[in-house]
Every structure is written in C-alpha cells, then in structure tokens.
Image (cartoon, rainbow, N blue to C red):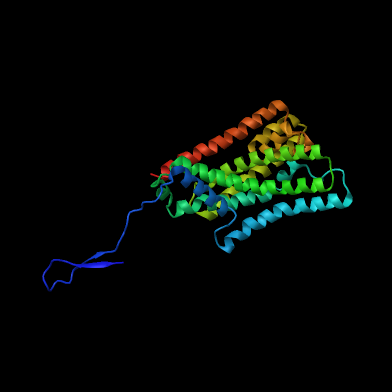
Amino acid sequence: MAVEHPAATSPGDQTRIHNIGYRAYDGPRLGRSYATRSLYSQSLRGAYGLGRSVKSKVLPMLLFVVMCVPAAIMVAVAVATKAKDLPVDYTRYAVIMQAVISLYVASQAPQSVSRDLRFKTVPLYFSRPIETADYVRAKFAALASALFILTAAPLVVLYVGALLAKLDFADQTKGFAQGLVSVALLSLLFAGLGLVIASVTPRRGFGIAAVIAVLTITYGAVSTLQAIADAQDAGGSIAWMGLFSPITLIDGLQSAFLGATSAFPGGVGPTNGEGVVYVLVVLGLIAACYGLLMRRYRKVGL
C-alpha cells in the first residue's frame, strides 16, 4: 500500500515522495541447472506448440499424426492378414518418412531460436546465471528430444502391433532396439543441422526455407548421382556419395552396423570399413553443429 510522505518544502510546493513498498526477493535461488532445465522444458513443449496458441499446435501435431498413421495401418494389415513379419523394418521407417521429418525440423528449428534472435532476447538470458553453453545445450537437447519423440512413436506403434500379431518376440525386440538407435542418431544430426541453419537468420521464413533446401536438395542430389553411378556400373562410388546428405548418412550407417536394408541403388549399402567412416562423419557433424552454435551465441550474447 502506497504511503505518502509530505516533503519538507514551502507550503506552496505540491511535491510528494511516494513509498510504493518494493521489497527485495528473499526466496530460494535455484541457479544455472534449474534455469537450464526450465529452458529445455519450455523449448521441448514449444516444439509441439504446448503452452502456445492453437495455431502454433496445428503443424507439429499434424506432422506427428502423419508419422504415426502409416505405422498404424501397417499394424492393422499385419494383424488382419496374420502376416509373419511387418511390411517395413524398424530401421527403414524413418528413411521412408524423411520428407515429414525434414518438414518438422524446418518448421520447429527456426521457432526454437529465430524469435530469440529477432527480438534480441538472447542477451537477457545471459544476464542471468545461465551461460552460453547452457543455452545451446538446452536448445539442442530440446529439439533432438522432440525429433526423437516424432520418430520413435511410430516405431512403438509397430512394435506393439507386432506383439499383438504374435510375431516372434526376440526378432521384433531386436529390430525395435536397432530402430531406436537409428532414430536417436538421426534426431541428434537433424537437430544440430536445423539449429545451425536457423541461427544464421532472425527471419523465421528464411530459416524454414534454408532448412528445407539443405535437407531436401542434398538428398535429391545424392540420390540422383547414386542412380547415375549405378547405371554406369560405378557401384564402388555409391557408398561414398552417401556421405553428402544427412538422410543417406543415417541410411548408410544403419545398413553397415544395424542390419538394415539399404535404400541405395541395388540395395547395397556401405561395407563395415566404409561404415566406420559414416560413424565418424555423423559424430563429427553433430560435434561441429554444437561448436558452431556455441560460437554463434557467444557473438550474439555480447
């Protein structure tokens, strides 16, 4: 409650001093870890439009449904026909649905970082206990987690359906575990690439277009070159061409080490030796994306 104190001035002076009762905060100070967890939680919720307007929920939820519906249809067909196996391997599902995954990354990576850049709120984060590394880790982990939910959910549908169809438990469990490893790597790689591209511009529209261009054009170019190489009987170069597109990187890695059937022309993926190069490139790209984000936000936070 405001209390007025008349100032010691001449009777004709109407000056007043107002005590508006501000008090210092004397509650618990939870520090950097709590702030980082809060930023991660809010960013993950925002990736699906939770806590935002209805309009913001439409696209991510629609893409989530689009990812899961084909899996549900496959399960229904397998149960109805009493099939001995699922129509699609767990490790192949994300590759088949890579267009939906790319669209999700393109829509949510700019939403995660572009608004902070556009409205210049990043320095406000760093004026508190949170530091550059905390911000980057929270944003990276949130988008990777959102992608993992998007890509793992249909695998769960396939796995539950396979058990309901009474398919071999050991084979289905092994395939399901391999699929989870594959989509975990895919989520980290796509999240890193999406955030790096989106962090270049504060304009969300430009960020969306750039992410789509990088993820789709590279895949189209690599697939075309691989098809040409296969037609020219230059099969030895097909595996090396796969290093230049995110989705073919994941495809080659899982075909080399996770027993997946490759989508490369002829269905022949990298050998184990070539697969080691795929692993190193994937892990190197993830680390490079993290490093680039750190460098970018150190400059922005100044």
